[in-house]
Length: 154
Image (tube, rainbow, N blue to C red; front, side, top):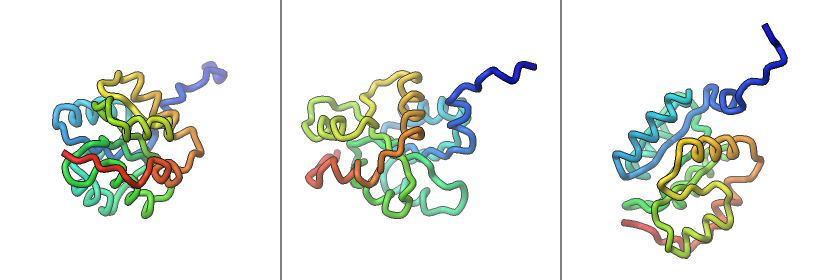
């Protein structure tokens, strides 16, 4: 047995990590949830911010990462993140969006390295998750830096 073989860094990252996935497109949510679970993450899927808040309020595994679509009906992803980090200050946040021409989305991408443009590959998603867990960037500061004027709703 060779003890000098390094473990895959993602294998170390995903051990007992819970991701709250918030995506209003059912197909995108189900496929993303399935691949993340195959990678060993515990995933809570929500179709909107209301469902996400309900899931995060339940007893059970603490949520380690919020993976949220930016543009959703009702409360948008930035508002959900701002609310979530108040009660879960350790929470890591990754925003994702299929919209690319919105100035606010560009602002999010500029203030945070934790932004994924849809469609994304599995490798890109896993790399972004690994990066989020490896950083000490404050999600509270990141969400605040995205600006208060974010009005993205469907």
